[in-house]
Image 1 (tube, each protein chain N blue to C red):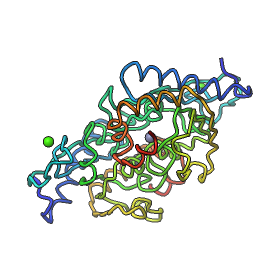
Image 2 (cartoon, chains in turn brown, green; image 1 turned 90 degrees about the vertical axis):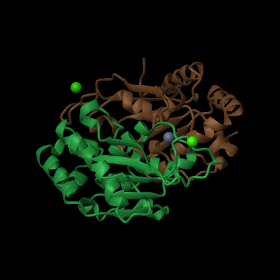
Image 3 (tube, rainbow over the protein chains, first blue to last red; image 1 turned 45 degrees about the vertical axis):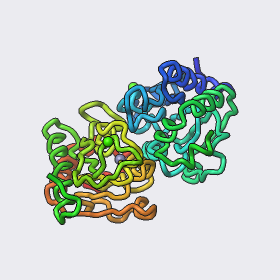
Image 4 (cartoon, each protein chain N blue to C red; image 1 turned 120 degrees about the vertical axis):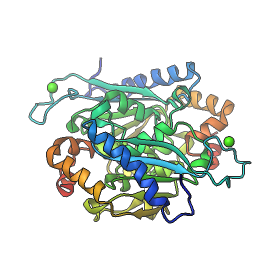
Length: 183
Length: 183
Ligand SMILES: [Ca+2]
Ligand SMILES: [Ca+2]
Ligand SMILES: [Zn+2]
Ligand SMILES: [Zn+2]
């Protein structure tokens, strides 16, 4: 399905995250999806040669605040959790895909901390219209951040925020400021 | 049980976290425990007066890497998740207790991001012998960080790291450096 060398890798990976966002929308959740994808086998050992040519979707997930009353399952965290325990090397060759860039990529989110903890070197984001002004902690720490301009990712969030401003505010830690900027 | 005005509040809160660390040890897990405690009712509204005098243990949890094959359930994250959805105001009056300070309080951990996301203003830590040299992101962001000197918290980690250096390394993102320093 995937080829890391292909120009379409980012678009294909984002589509996996977007399917999760659409699922979240249908469940009545906050419509943000993520996927953790890498060329390494989940249980790769340090001694293994990683050049099998295969691509592994280790985990894909979506924001679970409303569905599971979760305080920690932002989409990226759900994808990491669904991936389970992976060898440290796997993360270090992985790309994290996510449909929305928001608080995640400043210092104020568990997602940022998790990406830095595991040394994930690359993040692909569906849209960032709502958070352009923010400090980019990931980039400042050497993570490659690619921003696509996906209309569906934008629509999903615009629709959600219009009808559920309070739930969105709760998800970003109760900072009215952020929710106002995102709407 | 608790009184935020009492000099024993920090010691009592830490004991809740320590019970979780001991549970984790008996399960064969990484022996780190946490608790999220505040004087506000879990579903407090902004209009409510918080001075009921009661103290609520919203969530207590422990590192679940080995028990649940979890990549995200550091003790603090488990406590936040067990607390479930809380009104934003509740976090802003809460104290996070944890038996061990490690990567959590530098930029490289989801726990740090979560504490900053929710605006938790105060953290009480059982021991920090192993990570003294690290940059303290929480303090630099205005979080009050209290470090107790609890022998049992230290013993639990020393014992675990001695017998399970690889699992510990995995939990801190595969940075051999950290595990070496902590041992
Ligand atoms: Ca393998
Ligand atoms: Ca209430
Ligand atoms: Zn996040
Ligand atoms: Zn942590």
